[in-house]
Length: 228
Image 1 (cartoon, rainbow, N blue to C red):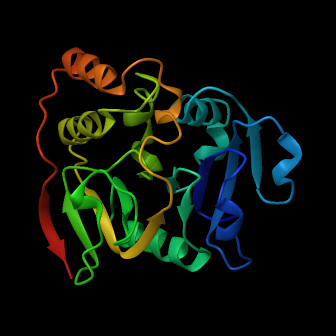
Image 2 (spheres, rainbow, N blue to C red):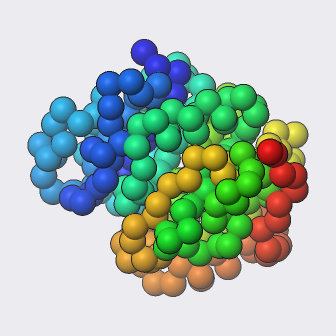
């Protein structure tokens, strides 16, 4: 059994089959939201079929597999439209572990669809410690996952989670968030093309409600330290 886990919310066009290889240092759980559960037979280690949104699906898997989750050191939760490969994911997990990160994400390639400039790769660095990890592809240290997973169903879109995660990490003295530049991924779909995870109404309204509920203050994502 590997010490890293990938949980991907997979639809009909998931790219996760391209990530797989025999030399991976991670296991993969497919949380499937489509209508053909047999679609990915042989392309996962663990499987669940669950509708609703990304974070509801991930929270459902975590809540119903607590003993399994506890066996891993890091858990990556990417969208299913990420283009990458096994070696890149292996290296990503290794860097997360070597830097003892609480939450991390791979940087995005230059030609990715993106929302935040900070997430684009800096080719001169290994990583950047930040106050921001995007909901697109976050990786959590399992030891601290419970601090964050309790908020995974706060809204349907995930809008605003980044600021909440930073606040929770800071208040619990586990504030090691990072973007890993050495292991970039390519985001292949335009932002919002999947309907923001099934959000009913405005995701920006959901973010406004989240900020009000937890006393969050919007700030531009910031690099705190560069790591060569």
